[in-house]
Amino acid sequence: MKIAICGASLPPFDKEILKKAYEIGKEIAVNSHTLRFGGCWGYPHEAAKGAFENHGEVIAISPAKNRHEHAEKYRFPLSNISEIKYTDLGIPGRNIPLVVESDAVIFISGQIGTLNEFTLAYYHKKPIGILAASGGISSLIRKIAKICMKVGEKDRIVYSRNPKMLVSQLAELNQ
Image (cartoon, rainbow, N blue to C red; front, side, top):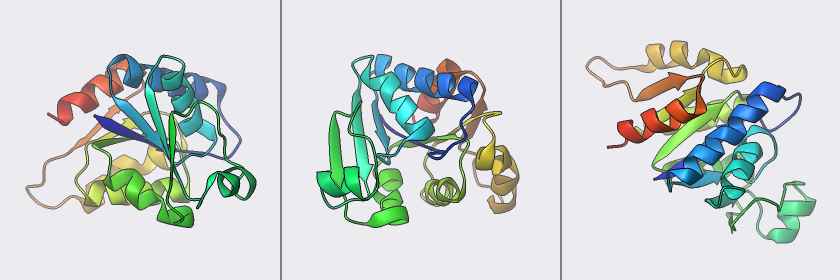
């Protein structure tokens, strides 16, 4: 599976949530999934680090047109990444290929950009995992999904505070 990690990329960061993001990345790697993220810092990069350090494939979907712009204009990391795909779509334009070309999406906290990624994932009926109690927009997803759910529509969202369980439940949803 190709699993996108979306979430807060700007401080402040909770140390416990950073640890859980790392563990999510590790679980993605040890289960032979590919981790995809927006090439940014924060919880998504911490998950990328967890996957990369555990020999997983990590693909950054960058808003930039090239490596220089990725590092200089956006000030995004070049570490803990197997491959960078440059979209030249800016932010939030890169969210479309990040989410649509992934098999599932995990959300960790987040702000407006994460909300945009969630609506894309929900609209495209992607299996969605929420790191419960991670704060930010993720704490509102149950309410948002309830409002958006159509009659007879199957819920494709799993919630867990446990990184291992979250990745496992998400894989089951994708079957």
